[in-house]
Image (cartoon, rainbow, N blue to C red; front, side, top):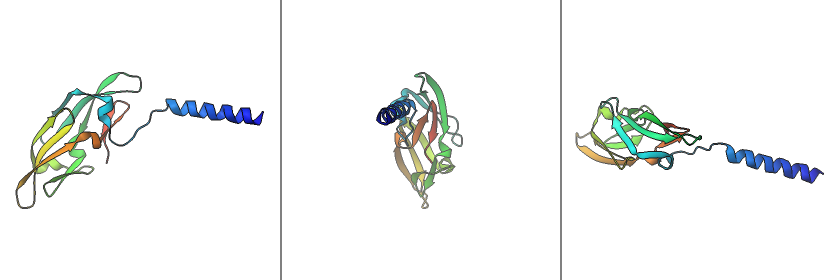
Length: 133
């Protein structure tokens, strides 16, 4: 009887875990519609907009301020909370819905081309996209 109760409890816990949504850093691209992704706003308020799937299966519009996700580290785009990179970067572009390109000024005043796969920096939390910092 004890073996049956333990087996039943184990099976129940396994089934319950199956239905819990899991979140891992990055990897939003697999659960968002990249064909509808775009950059909006001004340089200081640059926003990434896309449509991401919720656990219910529906897609919802979601945005994240990229200035809150990245910093300019001597011409190199670095992932950092409230980084404010657009104070010293120009010409932001989005390619393929997930590849973010921008030119950032280094301490010598030279602009360096940066390209970042946002899939490594953003996560879909049940239809809400957030930066991983």
